Length: 114
Ligand code: FES
Image 1 (cartoon, helix red, strand yellow):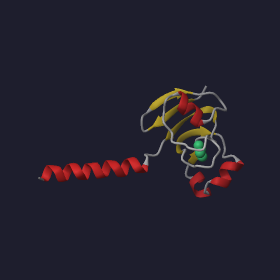
Image 2 (tube, rainbow, N blue to C red):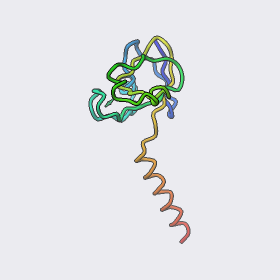
Image 3 (cartoon, rainbow, N blue to C red):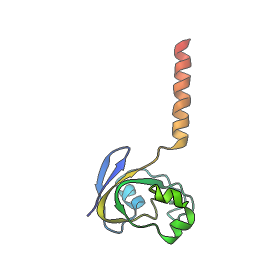
Image 4 (spheres, protein in one colour):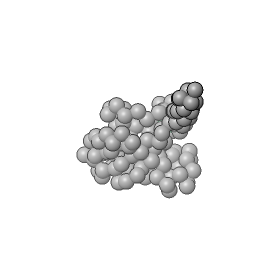
């Protein structure tokens, strides 16, 4: 059973060979955004394989993703399956969340200046 580490939380869980990353994340209560129910159409479930080994990109994933992104380790969590080897998966920070956090930080700084 492969060990999977999800970043940035660092949560480690054991998965089953052939299990999709999004299924494992869901059962481990690790949030990976998604909207299409795992049909490779929303592309919200992009993750980065930072270390270890996962399944090769499927034909569907190759059609949906840019080759450069795949080469850089970006994968669709709904299409990527566990092999028998451990891996480390980074869930990119939600862009909207980071924009809101930056706006709140600016607001706080401005309030402190008064
Ligand atoms: S869940 Fe929509 S592309 Fe993966």
